[in-house]
Length: 221
Image 1: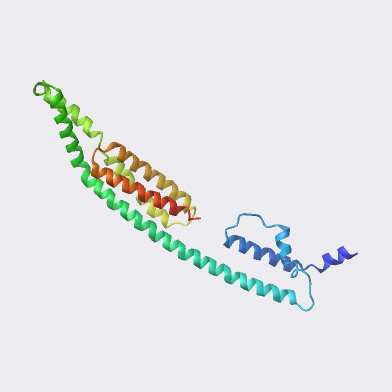
Image 2: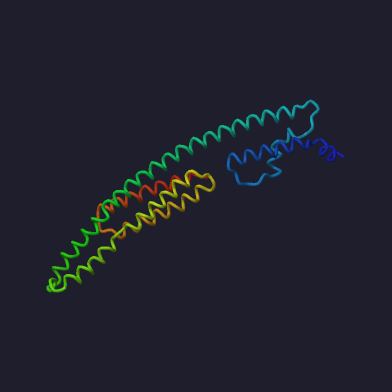
């Protein structure tokens, strides 16, 4: 009857075309939902056979408009991506500058710490002169605890990985987020170990920049 006739009027090619269009839209707009029959029925005026090929013409107009919109969307994403990458590289360069500042100050910081510990020890120990070699060794070990060389090496390695990951598009957001967390961990350790206010200042600056980077990374799909 009527239902059978209605089904016979449906153009399978047009339905397939509608499905392809919806798939393109979904991909371009990064929509994760599955395409439903309800979505296809949005094109119901075009999926029935029409001797005058009006449906095909309408489809071509819709397809053309969608393709143009997809091209514009991709161009916009590309432009945003380029700006984002420039910003991330700029912040990484600032972090590298601060890291150089930490490395330049690190050795002297340990020496300064040793001298401070030595001054305090002399005030406390009346028998400093008798035990100077042993106390010097113990104080040197204490001063070494503020050494942040290893953290700097690891941080530099993470920076290299971060810049390499920027070149790759596969799952970049998640990978960059993980590397940023690792960099933040090293910055925290530097801040907790150092007794130098200058190194602390650099460490805090690095953490601030990493937080800005972390926020920016959320925009990477």
